[in-house]
View 1: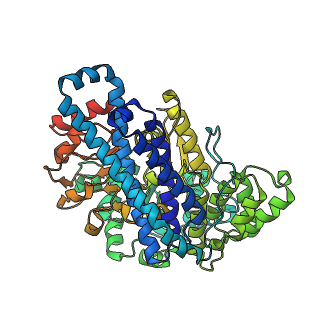
View 2: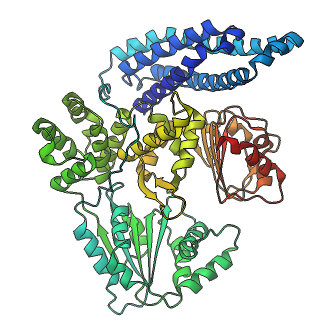
Length: 617
């Protein structure tokens, strides 16, 4: 994972440089006596970032160099937190600078002491970077002895500098007509069978199982044959109660929040009684027959001829559910893979220079017929302008793997490496959402703005630039399933593929914590995603957290938890206000992104917080 860590550190260093630049010329910096320190820190960061991009991950397999890189990463995180805090103080000073002179005259000791504390923090972080730069020589000696095992430095045209006006449609549908017709035939064929027919589609992650299921879901033959067609995304976190709630939501079009399971079950039974239905269970992982039987009880009221279409990566899952029919989704042929590439790239083969076409086909053939791999690499190549970049990707040994699953992951990693720096932190932030989460574009852009990921000279253009970033991540395949609700609120949503979610987890490693069982990760946690958990949440988890996702009625927090200065964004879902820690009511440097599913029960605390923070929305 060394290459991922080096790429992540480069991204973070770039953010620090961007945020440092305006501080150097701030009047507040001069008054605090840190202008020179900020300039030196900026030079340190720029120097080490330029150098690290050249050396990359060549030495990260060595323990000494890996430890050096971790020290650099920790220092960079701390520097960004300090700079963010300094930005807030500088903005406060700009607002009240006329009163500041008067205040300084009235309370010179108190005001001077605040400046002194700020200056000391800047000097300390500068010394840390100074020490890291001096240690670099050891890293360099090791690196020079190691062979290069990462792609060449990306120097081509970037993606997402301007908003994209159109989004390329889902490309994985190429070459799947035969599979779709076969699935439909199996689902509507009854043969006098009384029990629910279960058709399982088995395939590698990224092979197009979900896309195939969507084609079936939207087919007119299916709609005419079944009275009810329901879609449920299952994912890895399998729990019968949650799956039943999702089924309820698909049937009733409403959340099952706070409804007793017995009532939820009765509603499902009443809605399906005597009806021929099709339930599509997407991305099933559980191999537990008992759990499956407990879930199937809720579907027994349907009419004969009802069916389930299940997608999974595991043959054991298909066996555990006692599938009536199983189908191994084949890889795309080289011809179909090239068509997927063309659709995603956006040009016809005749319009592509012969030299580019030849290299492009060689790259596509290395994707092993997996649509997701083809799509993300097409997105990367679309942002390059020279044949040398194409050849660099083709010749990367990351693609020279025999294992199909590793090949797909290597394609994703290569795409991340070539992703423009300004998009990387935006992509990484999406790790905070659970698998299968429907991401709201407007809220996501608000979060990016709160973290300072979107930089522009004019404030009113921040959201417009953010839309460009969002569209670019869709273009390269890191976000997918874009939907726009034109007849309603006009909201735009998307999702992240589970394999892409796995990639960002690998990039962040112990800086991303899902759940709270991993107590050994508390010191490193920067992104924290919490769902229902029995017991109290350890307050140590919050020490350096900058993005927080909280969902679940059973969460309990330490009420004595103090204000957390690093947090920029909080997403709350299905939350009872009284369960939140006291520091929530005191936060003033971040956005609260209030979900429609937010629960407030007889508490003024959360209402006050949401009211206070609406100015940021």
